[in-house]
Structures are given as structure tokens and as C-alpha cells.
Length: 466
Image (cartoon, rainbow, N blue to C red):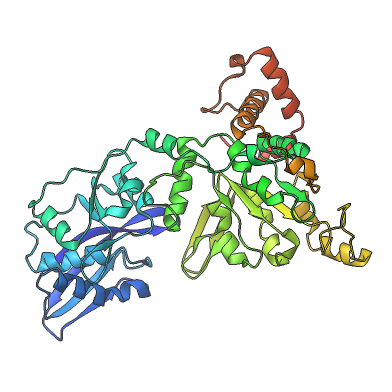
């Protein structure tokens, strides 16, 4: 008898259906898994055997062959533990129904039979309709992200025994439900705000203009001047994420395993700050089994490179094409994957190796040759893609001791949105989440034009979101 259970494999940021076929025949006891499984799937044999026995279900003492079809696509991850275990139980007659064509199963098994969360639950749920499935059974920790997809029933369970009882209709379980708009609104709050920043008014103004046109920015200043603090608050003045942007960003984070289980949806623009020792593969994505890199994790948000000259030159050079195209393609012998990577690049650096070349209170001990060598680590083509360069001087004591709060991010974001409206009208490229120019009064239009006039047309044509 051949038992069939349906699951899915994530390829890039999309999902493809996988049929788990099980055959039990005479011979030496054991499990043989075929169909291009990766090491995590091959190791699942011992996890599945222990989980079935510790759940008080019978385990066959015959030769078991598992095929993951289609056989020409490489499968990876531990999400096939649950469907393989169910196919064993189906062939042993533990499951009281053989008609599971409408179900999709994903989940990693622990040795005691508990279900553990897996990566890529959101893209699988979004692709379920195209696969002809309407019911998704998965671990409880993945329920939030999968339940935001309309038109499917999501059932969140905790153990293998719970799954068997659910299939055998011994327990009644309502599908998990989520209101996608309320989830997006609840998760759209930032933990930082521009009103925490003391002084640096000209830098704030520069970042406001950069946010209005989605310009790349380079911050230059001595240590302790607030470059990192300013960069971390830049996402708070960007326009609020639309539903489409949120879903696309959440898919990438779900594939990378970075989507918090209690959120279900990313409502704030990402801020990624990799260390300067990062490799080029980790930055753009890659590996034997390609995964999204930092530039894709920063999609629809901000990529912050602190101490820019300390990054390896070959690492910085791989940014040139993604900055222009808004995507990165990773080519391997077996497949070719494209990840979205439309982000704002914000870089920070010192003016010299010691950091005090422009600091009036600290003497710089660097020679002209050292300064020139330090600055030449950044290539001209990369600098050409950074539209705005801002000097961030050290603050005076009276600025730091001033107890008055600065302007909040919400007020700055309103001006950014107004400038974006003028741009949309100017380039006849209306966005669904923008008001029309007729909604602004005369004062707002003048203010928005002052910002939009500082924005280059080249950057608008290349980077404008929406």
C-alpha cells in the first residue's frame, strides 16, 4: 500500500507542493528517504521513530521507503517530519481516513512528539490556493503568520497525537482566525522616536529630505556624534507600510526564520545593521541552499552600514547592482533564485582612521596619506549611488543637557508624506496609499514643494516605493 500526505517546500520566497509517498514492504527494518532530501530531512528518521513510539502509536518493523515528489527538486528543512510521520501512521491504519487531499501538513517533531515551529509558513499559506488545498495543519507557533491569509483554514496543534485525533475527528478544533488590518495596525509601532535626538537639526532635515525621495545617505562625523542613533530612527519617518509591502517583507522574514511567533506580520519597516566583518554571501544571500541575505531582509526598509570603510571592498561592491535594480539574483547549478532588495542604504563613517579629523576638541594624529588611504577604501561607483552626504559634528554640552524633547517622528513623517504626494502628482504615478494633491491646503503644498525640490529625479525614478 502506498500512503500519500501533502506538504510543501519553500524555494526562494515562494512555495511548491511536495507529495510525501510512503511504501512499506518486507525486508530489514529501516527508513529510506529519497527525492533529494537534505541532511536535516535524512536525520528525521530517528526523530520520527522516537516521536511515534513516545506518542504510543505502533511503528512498523519492516522496510519503509519514503519518496518526496517531485524527485528532481531539492528539499530542505525539518518541516517534513510531520507529513512523513503521518504517512507511516496512515499505512499502519492509525488514521481512520485516507482522503487527505484537501490538507497540507508542515511541522518539525521533537522526540516526545511535540510540534516545533518551521520556517516559511507564510509563503506556504499564501500558495495554498494555487495548490488546490484549503486546510493547513501546522505547529501552534506558526499559526499567527499563516492565519492572516484569507480563504484557507489554519489549524494549530501542539503534538503528533493531537494531529491524529484531529484527523480522526476525536477533537473539535476551530480554525485560527486573524484580522489582517488589525494585525498590521497593532504591529506598526516603533520602539524609537526622533524626539530622543538632541540637536543635529541640519542632519534631521537632511534625513527628512532623504526619506521623501528615498535617497541613500552617508553620515560622516567623529565617534559619539550620534550617527547610529539617527540612522536607527530613519525608518520611523518613512511612509507607513502598505499591506502589499508588509506581506512581501513578512514572507522574506518567514523564510529566514526571523518572524516573531506572536506577531504574524511585519508592520514596521525593517532596519538591518550587519557587522563590518560580514561576507558578501551573507550580505546579498546565498549558500549551498540559498537563503535571503541582509539586503533582502532590509527590503522596504533601511540597511545601515556602520564604519563603512571597515567593510571588505568586495563586500561593498556587490551592493552596486541591487541598489540599481531593487533585486538580487542568486545563480546556482541546480536553480536560479531572485530575492527582492529595494532598500534605503544609510552608511556611517569617521572622517579619518582615528575619527577626530573634524573634531574641534580632539587633535587628529593621522597623516594626509593615512586619511586619503582610509577614504579611498570606498569606490567611486558606490559613492555615486549615495545621493546625500551629511556631516554630523560632535554636540556641545548645552545641547546634550537640554531637557526639551525634539520633534516627534510622527510630525516629520507627515511632511514626508506631503512631499511624496507632490512627487506622485508631478510624475503622474499615483499610489493607492497616498492622498491626492487636492487634499492639501495651500500652506501644505508650499511646504511639500520645498522638500520635493531638493529631491533628484534620478533617485525618484529608481527608488520610489508604492
